[in-house]
Length: 159
Image 1 (cartoon, rainbow, N blue to C red):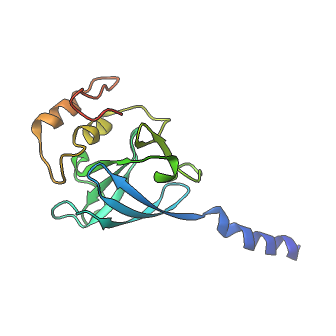
Image 2 (cartoon, rainbow, N blue to C red):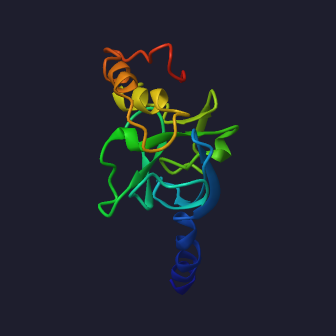
């Protein structure tokens, strides 16, 4: 009995293993991420700038794309326009999800392959590379009207 208890105490901490990686977004920022395998991450900006009046970062995982958002004290983005997609060269460049060791990199973007492209994804793709704090009514209108199923407008970065 003591053997099994000791074994459990030794192995249990490994079940919630935390990995450290550097994430990159479409604005060329570098973000240090300490993530567990369920996608809960602590984020710290190491290169680049925060959006105006926002000094914290949070992962955005509501659609097909995985993004990082500049957030205020609420730790929630005011709008998806505060979020940028994470870019990658390989799965190891993406935050882990669903108990896996790494995330999923498809076509240079961190993705959640089980989800469909949605409006939030179109917004992040249409604002990719435009800078932080950008308000472009034209790009936003294009993204918000991507249809169902959502087709990212041709002038935006493609998934």
